[in-house]
Length: 429
Ligand SMILES: O=C(O)C1=C[C@@H](OP(=O)(O)O)[C@@H](O)[C@H](O)C1
Ligand SMILES: C=C(OP(=O)(O)O)C(=O)O
Image (cartoon, rainbow, N blue to C red):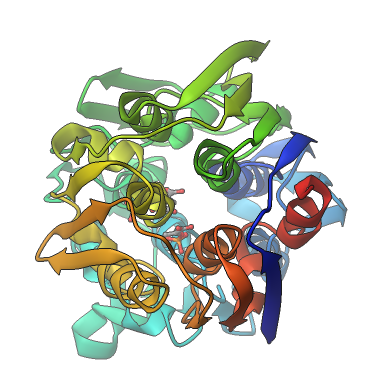
């Protein structure tokens, strides 16, 4: 699909929105609910394509899931009642689904095939397959199990201590979820702290997990009990409107009930450092995940250096941070972010290529990018390359231009934010 966004060169964004539920938390709520005994109720579930694919995968494993809009009910019979699927499990575009499912299925005593779209078949799976094979799972696939389609025969796992070479919540979660059905304890040590939604949610489902900064340990053979999960708004979706309000002159936006897990709030820290005017009002002290209402007003921004430990706390927000940097005074340097190369697209290349078409002064480096601002952006024909975060970043960029911005492959936006254009139109003055 191609969308044309027309701007008169004088757009402002004003109003209040609630962004859809957090994608990472929604996936985990479905997964843990499906492995539990008893009923799980999920409120605020993200109905983006990625999470719908997670639901479909578990239905194929025999789990009874009723989903209506952002409410889902799972009548779990426990992990032991998962059934060998007759069909290939298709994760679509979702890296989180395939990698976490690998961990879950590694513990299941049957055979499963997992695959996804063109992008998924290019993303590395060995980072998960290697530790799972060490635990005893039989995993094969293209390039000896490094790429999907994958075949998994699970069961009879042994706990391991795994020192992960990457700060990745998908790797950490896959190993911990396999550890749940392994003999003995399983420990994951990461180089930097990645998002901790799996650990928090396992505790909510009655499972004991020990965390000491970069080290997380789970004891095997624990069972999960169904519970109720309230999913807060996705800070990664809110990020597009936080940046939009900060850079589009005379804008002011409030975003209600945004998830504020400290392992995800790097975007707020960076925007504040750039000079953004953001106020935070706590809205929920849920025992699992904190949330807040965020208000942002347009202000002058300055370039910053972003690298090191903050990167996993804002990895998915780098495309929209790059746009903010094109409007900031001075130089922004983003480094230590080579992980961007293995997302839905190579996000170093796609961000640089597409923002350059709109007149940004941006260059790639091996682990990030350098942006000189401010630049006056102009309307252009651009492409999401099938990457939802690139598509949304370009739509926000179009608000700064005068004329028609044409975004090819805009349908990818429904991966994580199905009503994005509705919100954008409602907020435009
Ligand atoms: O665990 C998760 O829910 C996610 C972890 C991150 O990926 P990595 O684990 O590959 O860093 C992130 O980019 C992705 O959008 C969601
Ligand atoms: C990288 C992302 O997701 P996933 O890895 O689940 O495809 C993302 O949503 O930006």
